[in-house]
Each structure stands twice: as structure tokens, then as C-alpha cells.
Length: 126
Image (cartoon, rainbow, N blue to C red; front, side):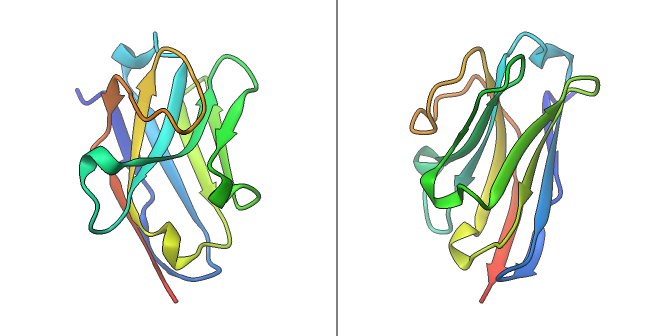
């Protein structure tokens, strides 16, 4: 059973919206921080950038400056599913979006996570 499974990616025009989902399996229940990271086109996996993180047992959320006011991260504890609502999408938001989990949250500059999903592609055209 995969620990993290993403869904909801797709292709939209600039200004459009998408909602990503990440369903976490039982092995992830000990991880208190979940996040979304983006691998931009042409970048290596090691260059994945933090987009938004959430501390699932508290109200703390962390966003990259480029998405503040446009993206909203949330978590449903009953289903252990994380979401990323992305509004007013821009071409620069394109990339492979990965769901990830680890024990604690810090700012989005820290991209080291214990568990990773397979990713879901987001393409925004101008």
C-alpha cells in the first residue's frame, strides 16, 4: 500500500483553479507535518521547492511567498487527507506537485521529508 497518493492535477489556463488531494496511508499517521512541493519543468528532483506545509495537529501553515493569497492548504483528520486549493494559477505554477510528510514542520525552505508521493502534474498555460 502506497503511503501517499496524490490526485487532482491537470491542465488549466492562467487564472484558473485546481484542487490537489493527498491521501495518507496508515504508516503516515505518526507524521505531524504534511506538505506540497513542486518540481518545476527542467529541474532535478533535488531542486524541488516547498509550496505549502501544514502542521496537522495544530493551526500552523506555511506558504511560499509566490503563492500566498492564492493557494490554501488544509487537512482533514478523519480521512487523513491533505488538500491544496490553487486559485488564480499562473504559468510559473506549472510543475510536478509532490505530497510529502515528516514529523515536524519548519518553513518551506526546508525540503527534507521522510515520505513522498509519486506526484501529480499541473500545467498552466498563458
